[in-house]
Length: 334
Image (tube, rainbow, N blue to C red):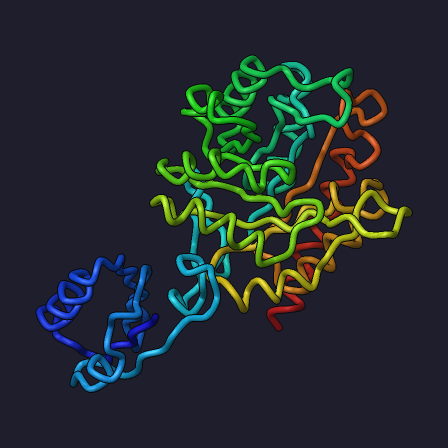
């Protein structure tokens, strides 16, 4: 249920209403906009008399919310959410460029890439330390050493870092990582999502290979219901009958998610296509359709990459793309 208060309601009256509603065992999410304050009621609202609440002189309207996701529902939070990652803002008109290698392979590699993407205007450095791989024989990351090398790159460049976490057992290793990524394979690892909800740290939540937007939002709900509202969604392609690209990039998800939720929405064209030459056009399309940022794989020597070299851009390719993305965003604003 949503209770919209009239403009200029006295704080005392608002607190009295909130206290009364809490007596029903409800959790109240407060969203203060420019003209209205929205109270989102989470819990069993069947005992609440909607007509009585509507009749109060401080209430503008009362509505029932039929969607199962509440915390991440735009009806509860009409204004865009801005998530801050180490001083970098994502959402609410702030566009973030996240770039870096699929996997951290060595100190020389991550430092070279970090310097290059920083020079090209990247805001956040990505790099995998723990890699979920289809085959148990493939390179699965440097693990704790990989995180240490990411921190070294952050110290030199000043770029905040984001890396994928695969299980709750790894949480102590990620205490000094600026943003935790939940990969597509773990989107419905509910134990992990609950634990991430207890942290005061931004979470990048990727859409699963075969998951609907509703399922993505319900996964975000797990994190937010546990107390952490700093969630950023990521469209990274879904599995369809098409076998030409690695996955099928669902760009329609971007405007649709913006209608459904106030959370920022990023696009990962690297994993979506799996093909280097398709990353640039899909990045431009994502910027044009309203994405709040891009997550792009960059490697200083893709031919020798230990993971996903075929979809990685070289630093000079990323530099050229970054310029085009900025131009597209300016054109869309006009």
